[in-house]
Image (cartoon, helix red, strand yellow):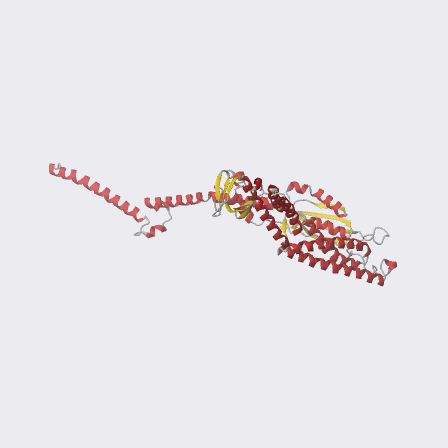
Length: 503
């Protein structure tokens, strides 16, 4: 094999590196084209459909990382809002869960049953269940309560109603009554029945089914934030709808045969003549109650319309009427022995009257105290006497005492008293002006009478009619008479005697 010539060797040395560099460059260009084609650009929008990260270009990788960072940043920005929502929901749950007893309170349920037994008069013979049902992992679990008891119909209703007025949820699932008889020969003694009662309540376990609760920094401080408390208040609180048993005297027991209740005097009934007499009494009381209702309504109307004079007059009459009707109702109560009349008496006389009397008692603290003209005149007479005796400081004090009197309690001024109050305040202002005038301590040391205008020496300064006496310009000399000087002070005319400087 012949050796390469020097020229061939030179060409080989130059050509081979050139081809290698060109090949490497071409391969790099192909890789660049492939990478560029995988970028999301207007020329290659189809690159957005590539889901395999291994096929992404570098720009696409950066774009995806940027999107992921923006997503995390948005989630981070929501942390504060989400923490606030969690705090609000936790506070709402804690507030509303008060209607569900927790486990410790369930353990006290036996004590509650004993209290209701004493309050109603029934006798509880057995208590069953009181065991939670359902999955222990559930937040709210059912607790059945089965009771057996004996008592009268009224006692049973009262016992049941005590559960219906609890702050906790207690539902009545079912009840059964086996009619019983009287326990004595007394026809007025109630019949005692056998009663089965199934109730149901619920127990709330806030930690049931939950992993470790999310910890929120500064939770105790943040839950008292006014904004969070406002959001909690905006959510209507869960509450138990209560039913208050309407009291009724001598309610008829539906499990006792009523057909002999009015057969005649020998069976505990009354004669027809006596019946008519009692009915007339009940009807008369019904009319009085209806009249009282209208008078009470009119009394409130006068108050709303600020007709205080009519209000106080009618209120006095209504107070006397309430006392009179109360005596009549108490007197009629033992006399009305007929069952149907007692029901009417209770529903249309005792019930409405009790409500009216109760409402008036409750509103006694809020009752408006009407100040009549006669009340104001008492202050006005004291003030006038002080003015007459030139006790201006005392006269001004009377006006302040009246203002203090009106500020105490819920006092309102009657229409006929307004002119006297205006007079009282005006006199008080006059007294104040006189006190300021006397504080100037004006002293007359000389008087020069002239036809064209007299001159008086006041506090060693000569003054003529029309001159301002004080630096504030409130007091001006308006006339020089034979025995007095006349001044105008804050719009009031004041005479100052010349002899011995008497005021």
